[in-house]
Length: 346
Ligand SMILES: Nc1nc2c(ncn2[C@@H]2O[C@H](COP(=O)(O)OP(=O)(O)OP(=O)(O)O)[C@@H](O)[C@H]2O)c(=O)[nH]1
Ligand SMILES: [Mg+2]
Image (cartoon, rainbow, N blue to C red; front, side):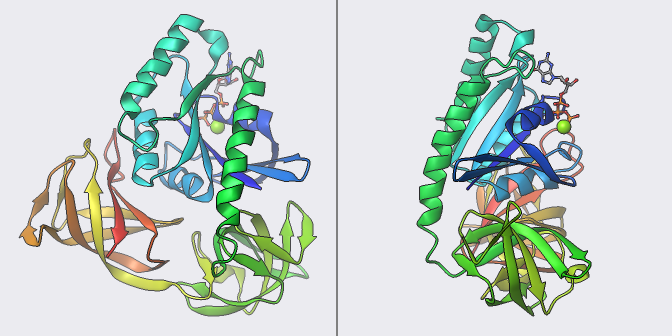
């Protein structure tokens, strides 16, 4: 199984592309599309609620091993920039730039656009990502794009199988009640292997839950390894207790006060003590306040763009996380570039 996010700017042809790549499933501010190729399942996540909201963008990136960044053939824009910043701050490893609507452009302009993409991603985690021009009306490039996705899918699968022996961890993106079954959640096995009858805990609420059954792509399974998109029926917890981003595992840290090591983007206006910001922690997203900032152990009131600093931050509610998770700080009302910093907990 490989999970592929479809992100990029507004009206860049994201949904048209998703419809060519898979069959529509669950729909909310992110929409899932599935494609089965032999024994392999590809799950595509269209971040349709972006750019209006940042959450579908960060969620789609977090849920996936591969990102497709849609750039319209008409050219780059601030939203593509924002997607690149998010992928870089989250240290995304695998992806492609998809130059969409190639039928509305010409080879010369497309090759110039590929060069521009290379230039703006230089020095980021995306600097080696290939650009592929496609049209969903003439089908130009679609087969090439699929080949590249399958090749990246193989790499993602071997990465995921290396994580199968870790303690199990499921990140939840949807949850609902099914008559006769009870609480059902959808999400990704982020690491380890889950099994029917596993007794785990739902974080941050600390509620014990047992896995009653596991489905993947509507097929019942006894176990599911890292990288699998699953539907789980749970005993011991109700769907109304869940929220997006809750984690089902053996152990998570739970906190509302954080000490974060942050890298500010080059494009932000900076970060100040007392600032009201938004924290993205995995799929969880919550308002937060900056309580203190220091650089090299020295307290400061304002951290400049591009700097590395330590930040004390308080969230409005408790969130669940693990040691190596990456966080994003954003300012949701900034018009052009809402991301401020990428962080890890210290
Ligand atoms: N000519 C041409 N038009 C396209 C292509 N792909 C999408 N479109 C058109 O472009 C418009 C936007 O496409 P969508 O697929 O809805 O793009 P989107 O990024 O999902 O848009 P929003 O979710 O509304 O932001 C639609 O009218 C599509 O029919 C393409 O390859 N060629
Ligand atoms: Mg759309």
